[in-house]
Amino acid sequence: MARLVSTLLFLVLSVAVASAGTVPEDYWHEVLPNTPIPGAIRTLLCPDLLREVRDAPVKTGMRWWYHYAANESQAHNDPDGALFFLEKDLHPNTRKQLQFIRSAPPSPFIPRPVADAIPFSSKKLPELMARFSLQPDSVGAEDMRVSLHGCEHPAGAGEAKSCVTSLESMIDFTTSNLGTRDVRASSTEVGNERQQKQQYYTVAGVESLQEGGKAVVCHVQPFPYAVFFCHATDSVTRAYKVPLVGEDGSKVTAVAVCHIDTSAWNPRHLAFQVLKVKPGSIPVCHFLRQDVVVWTPSTWAPTM
Image (tube, rainbow, N blue to C red; front, side, top):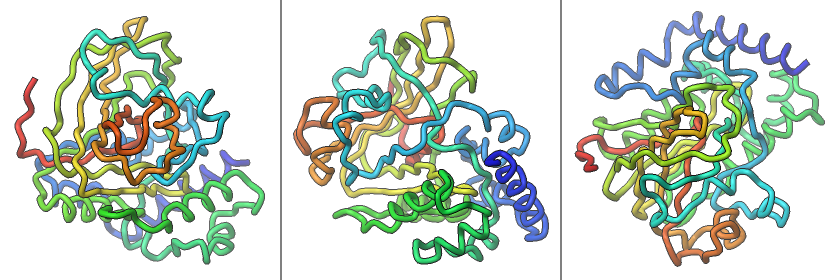
């Protein structure tokens, strides 16, 4: 039933795209002519690729909100825990046991005029469930409820945040917060969507995407169409591109982010429980799933 609803929704939205007379990808090329589209976004623009990855491994439920507190079971059993590490441990030839999966089933971008016409509010949840044929007790309805609640949570001190409901809105939020249209968009690129969990990955190299400063990170949210939680903070963030090689030779180009100031995070956040550190004590780093986008100014020349 879920697959049927998803397929029907995709067809309906495709008609909406055509009737709206605008294509999100066109806005990207107009505003960011020198910025290649990363896989995390490209997937949601291409219907054929979207169908290919619809059955790829997905992990729903986990939220990357910094006010999120992990329970005891998650602290010991959640595979997301392996994504966290300390910056001092990021160097070539390090072995890491990782699994790169999606945060949510892929949903397509729709044009901004179409997205803006759909209410995006917890108060409109019954209307949204009816619009997308979701039963109140369904997984889809719960995902929608949790996503809306997280999007409506107040921004932290020194944080700018927005849940963008279109690619156009993501571009505008990002360029506004970075203060430039000369930007780089990066995401973790997995060679094989159905790639099984490796016993280990070996770090083949480390490349800085920025020496330090502001970055915008956009996390996909479970929703019938593409919605991303994007945020930027005043605290320094360091971002890296990390080529990885699996034990069977599988290659992943991962993106990792290190948060220098974590003093405002929930003390029970999964990162602190896994790394055994306290908020604000030491930079916390994590690899990004393949449906997360990191935006950085592209004017900075990386060093190896």
